Image (cartoon, rainbow, N blue to C red; front, side, top):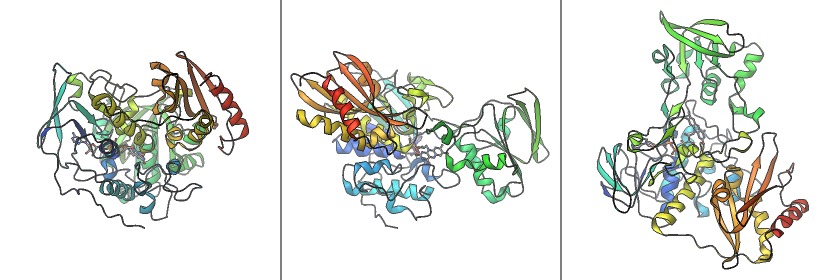
Length: 511
Ligand SMILES: Cc1cc2nc3c(=O)[nH]c(=O)nc-3n(C[C@H](O)[C@H](O)[C@H](O)COP(=O)(O)OP(=O)(O)OC[C@H]3O[C@@H](n4cnc5c(N)ncnc54)[C@H](O)[C@@H]3O)c2cc1C
């Protein structure tokens, strides 16, 4: 396993004293680190503060059973230092310099394609160190003021170290604060966040509330220890192997399903929890079955609420930031800016609040690192362009190169593969400007905002297992959707794809 000596500012350094900064980023998880990296590359001065004592965010403590559900495959048919390799490495942050790419690979011990939690934490620390990301650690944001001015709002973040003023605040504070429903008795029981060492559950009857990844992670990890495990929630558990998407419980955690099906001491129930009460040293749990409405009562030793997490927005709602849903995610524009308070942006897993099109009901991967890292990069570019006038110049493409360029984007762009039907690679055509790559954008902005003629290239999937390119052609601000065929080997450079894409590009007219 390679040792990566951090070369940037270590946690001991305390940069960014309180004061005014062009941009303030809060958080040192993958979201905050990726935004800071890109802002620096774009030359945007900014401060990063974090309540943590070092980099890594949530991965400093979770997943509880110490292994991720996002893979990194050290061996793939493409170069490890290439962008195309990012398709196989969900956990490294993304860099322009080849030497800062795929850092996770060098920190894995070979026992699993899923890094352990400490390996992930080391990966994020290595990225921060190697790329020189600076963070003021142990600095907690505690309150926020919004001060209107002639040129827009200024925000003042009160922290444990003093006040930070800025016109652009980026909150990458995660979605990892424990949440429980108001069911009677739910306040008596442990949350996922309170789970104890596995051995302390030896020979215990365990009731887990919730049938999503966190509930199944605990059930999988406790299979060896528990005398009985019951998982319950009103709706049937979805499994990713059935949805053929990241919706549902990941394959890593489905062992309890087999134990349930084979009668191995695990019960997976569709039932709502009506109440939980103390019973001696344990609990009595009353449920209502979803199918028959019949009552079920269990006496158990332990109850764990794997009922989800919320985002710690503190007083942002009080300054006008609208939120929605159980996780209290902020309502966001497609560029991850608060829909109600311009100048407040969100990075990292909070970006899942900008849902995109959800074609075929399949959400973006913004909740996990392999999707959020690209959102963070685009967010930093957007801030640079719209707030600091730093746009990225892109060289024109010769007419004869457009088809190979598009085919290559579809085959090799990790952004399109990880953020299907969500991020798009754009090529525009105009009489004044010629043919130019427009870079990556949220697909919905290409469809909704209008602009020069062009195409948006995306990869999509529809829940049947098929993965295929989708091309959106915009002419005179009218958009047509064209789907290219799937390919069992995921090769989109066949003569069939080439011909169909050429015919679509032809519809852009004389270039
Ligand atoms: C149990 C669980 C398991 C998961 N497993 C995976 C996985 O295997 N793979 C994957 O890709 N994703 C996983 N996720 C999703 C995961 O949370 C994100 O991918 C990733 O951690 C998000 O990074 P982030 O930077 O947005 O937030 P976080 O990693 O949560 O970081 C938030 C940062 O904000 C800081 N912060 C928060 N509040 C304040 C404040 N008031 N003042 C200052 N700083 C503050 C924190 O200190 C921290 O540095 C999991 C989520 C959960 C809940």
